[in-house]
Image 1 (tube, rainbow, N blue to C red):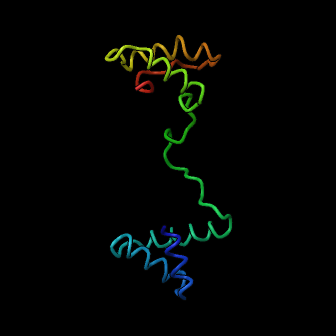
Image 2: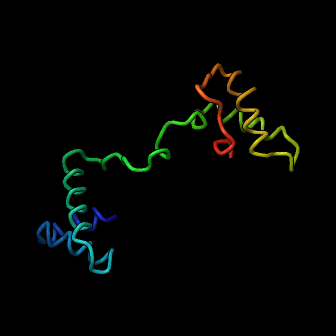
Image 3: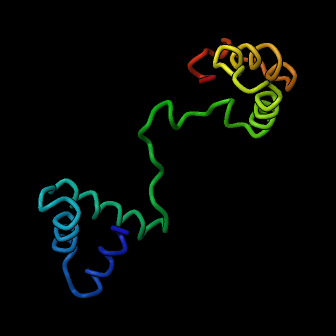
Length: 119
């Protein structure tokens, strides 16, 4: 949406800096030279590659996880649905993942999944 507004301002004749500063004023109450620079950089990247850049922040959020695998998801969901209501706990899921679900799928891990991952 920001890039669309930036492009609209550019089509109306605003300079790159003027358009980006106007976007920064609209979106951040007039503060943010850095935000204006980021808008220009994103617009330049989009103009060259026709897509937004890959998000590199996030650390573990963006990392690969066994739980994102479709087969693991299906098996985990069916396991959880087979438990009686009120008997689902993170510890029980952790044990099931490490001893039943992952070994049945032929997946081996260096370390067993922890309770936090199961949660």
